[in-house]
Structures are given as C-alpha cells and as structure tokens.
Length: 299
Image (tube, rainbow, N blue to C red; front, side, top):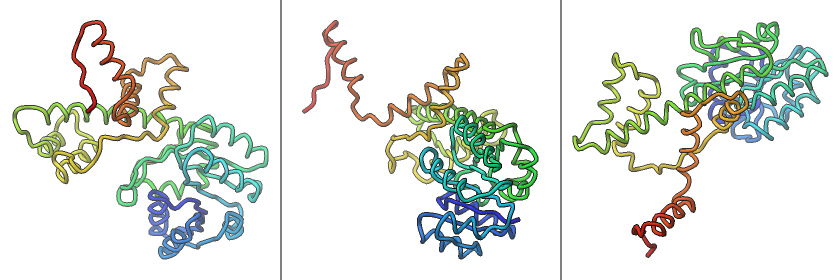
C-alpha cells in the first residue's frame, strides 16, 4: 500500500527500508535532504515539505510520523492536520505521552482525520528482526493500514491494543519494565565483575541464554557488549532516559501502584549523570560533623 513517512532517523530510515523491501509505495520527508536522498536510493519518493508529501499521496492518505516526542511531533502533526483532509490517517510511531495522543485524536477527529498511536519497540535491530508494534485507535482504521504493520513487525509482532492512547500507554509500561530489567542485569553483572574469581562475564551471559530463567534478548545484548569490551572500559557510566520511564512512574503515582523497582531504576539513571553530587557531599559533611568521620578533601 502507499504510505507517507515523516522522520528518517535511525529507526525511521530502517522502517522505510523494510517497507520498500516489501514493495510498499513510500513517500518520505525529513528536515535533512541527505536523509531524503538516502531514502530515495531504496526506491522511496522524496519530498521537500510536508505539503509536498501530502500532495503526492492518493486519497485517503496515510502518514506515519517518526520524529522525537514533544514539540517536534506536536508541530509535525499540526502541519499535517492543516494539509490533510477528512478520512486521511495520521500514525504516530514515536515515543509520545499517551495523554497527548488522546488530545490529538480528539482534535483531528473534529476535522474528520483519523489518528493511530503506534508504540514501536525494536531499536536499531528492527530492520533485520522487525518491530514490535502496539497500536491504539479506531479498529477499522487500524485494519485499513494493517498491511504496513504486518510488514514492519515480525510474525505475531503487532496488536491493536485498544482506543486512542492505548498503544503508547502499553509502550510506556513496556519501557518502564525495560528500565527495571536493565538495572537488575547491571547490578548482577557488577557483582560478578567485582568477585575474586576472574569470571568470564560474556561467557556467563551466553550460558544463561541456554535454559536459564533469566534468559532474554537484553541478556543476549549484554553478552554482545561484554565480548566487544569485557571491562566496559571504552564507555562512561552515563545513562540517559527517553522520558517513558518518568511517565511510567507518574502513572504509578496517579494509580497508587507501588512500582518501586521501576522508580529506583529511573533514579539510578539520574545519579549516573552526577560525577560529584551536592547531596553526596552533604552526606559526607554530616558524617564528619556528628561522628568525626574522615572526609576526602579535594586536592
């Protein structure tokens, strides 16, 4: 089928490539003309603006938006809404906050434009393995563009999960769980690394992939990273967060759910960005004040 695609970053370009491999007619736009030319090399049709993209699509149109969450997505959807017509479809595949989806779906519905929110998981491996897709919005609209989801996902890798916002809500919780899983692996492997046994961490990761109850794709990726750099000496322990971990914690607070592991894993990421925090200096100063405990002075 024909689909417009806005946003040709690491995931977006791979998604376009996967769509073209399955012979979909893809019309693309990106702020980078180099990215547009790269997509054109796959057989996609490049455009110089969102209006140009809309003009090259047959009615009823479908446009996939794959740009960063927040203002970039908001502005892109706003511009598309001004150019699209009734019965067209906007699909947001980025990491949007689900409450924004509910609002946008309502705003677009007033214009007769349909909106689907597609939580997308797969990262840089999606081109080869496919993307797990969690789709929210009207089911008849989902069925209309289902051929695109079928191409992008592996077998049994996409699902219409509910109404507007549900796709990104499910993806948000998915990412919160991911935070806690990653933190658990990180703590366990740090203990292994600090043991007195000189353990082969990559070998242990590989071992655990065969029959262990903790086997997972994340563990497989841990083994890949450790084989390339056994002591992880080439990277800093600085960890960003995409925003979905924060949203999951906020959702837990709203629902009175004690999501302790997910919350703590998010806070550890915050801590990773502080090389010498004021709070920890305060702890050292207090121990020195009440107990005379030694402090390490800056040279």
